[in-house]
Image 1 (tube, rainbow, N blue to C red):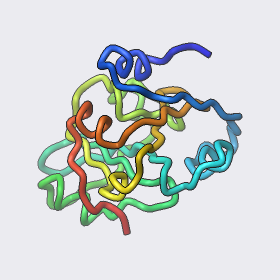
Image 2 (spheres, rainbow, N blue to C red):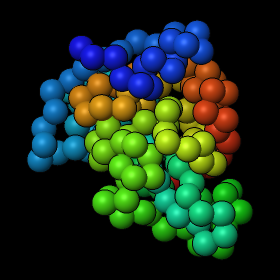
Image 3 (tube, rainbow, N blue to C red):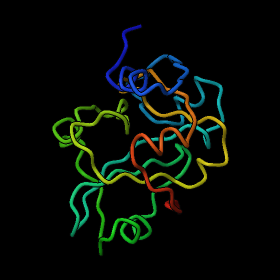
Amino acid sequence: MTKTNAMRLMAQAGIPIRVQEYAVDESDLSGLHAAEELGMPPEQIFKTLVARGDKTGICVFCIPVCCELDLKKAAKISKNKKVEMIHVRELLGLTGYIRGGCSPVGMKKQYPTYIEEAALLYDEIGVSAGARGVQMLLSPEALIEYCRMTAADLIE
């Protein structure tokens, strides 16, 4: 397996991670598929969503793969009146990542980043390692500190 930029950044920061690979299904890039392939509860695997706020611009939200982002809660926590998901065609240019492999670690820029507070209920959560079919499992506290995330109630 090739080390991704996100994995290298975690190693440089001294943050222990476990890397898990899974078979990618191009017709199903969902996080639920990833959780199923890894044999992990979907509440413990987090997807990275990129949105645009009407006041603050780009912001990033990490929520469990089994949940939906509540756009009203997302707007409130990010100090916007309205938040909309970006178009998938914008993802690579803004983050350096593609759909199905977007990690909160190592984006092109440091965007305001928020994580569903339920992440703190677990010793370990999974986030994309920055490539399809690869998850990094790590302490939610370490991820929050490294990415300067704000934990909040984000889901419907």
